[in-house]
Image (cartoon, rainbow, N blue to C red; front, side, top):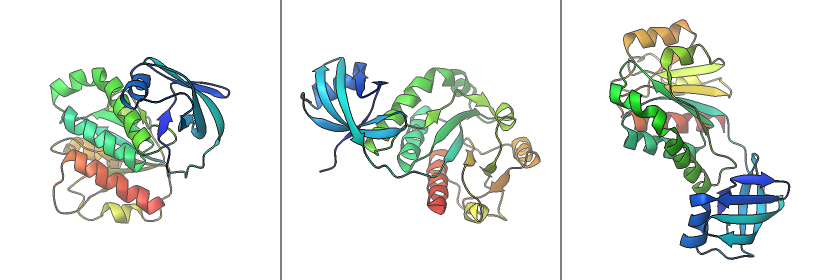
Length: 235
């Protein structure tokens, strides 16, 4: 039987712990007991763990040997901010797929109220990614960066980069991925897509602009499809 996996909140040597609400879920909801064994993700690896102490705010583990975890190709997302409930869905699903990092982007067409509130959502987005990582048995959750404006972001990233743009009809994402190797950064626009100025900025800075096809997808759907295609290409 496959053991459930948890991401440790604390780790030192052969000891690890879950704390706060994280521990409360295991102790109160799942009714864990001393001696039960789980897989514990610590420091980018997964180890066998046995509960040695438990209460509603802290669960401690003694760590054993490593658990084999297949590596996932490094694909990151620059995700323009859109409606928060749908953005959380995108973060959850892209985490399950294996995306390595997500940077929330304030684009020209990001709604001003969402841009203003985005900084207060970071911790919630990280909790969503943590829960999805445990559910999908990852070795560690994706990093969720602080929101930044697109032009600031473009000046900080190099390597293989593809921006999804529905008007890039001459090249599909699948074609753009041909011959590339990870790491890869994918940029997904907001509702309404990237503006013309932003599209030109991508090209001027060496990004490939590619399309997901003739239909117009919601931002969260585009993010999931793009991540799945890229990760499949690199498998």
